[in-house]
Image (cartoon, rainbow, N blue to C red; front, side, top):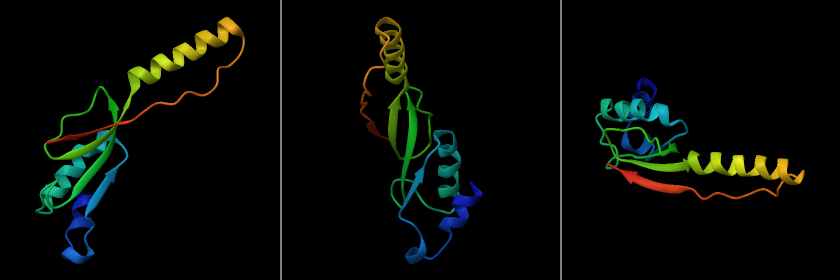
Amino acid sequence: KHYVQLLLVRPVQQRPDSLIVTDDNLVEFAVAGVRAAGLTPGADLTIVSLANAPAIPPVNGDVTWIAIDNTTLFDACLDCLNATRRDGVIPPPATMSLTVTETA
């Protein structure tokens, strides 16, 4: 919270217009730091965060989430392990899509 607040209590020209949070466990504190600096998340500053779906944490502010569906990832890992056991060959890499969600 305090690091974000220090980053934002600057003149408008020196202040960032967005914040990227790479750990969804820290978003709540980042939003609190934005509010402590007297700014409104989503209006004065865009916040984007990675998240582990389907367990996106509740946050009191506008956040754009880049979510990785861990259920799908886990299922794909199990499919790869089962195919390797069955065929004795490691399957080629699979691709997954990301979901971007905006919350208020």
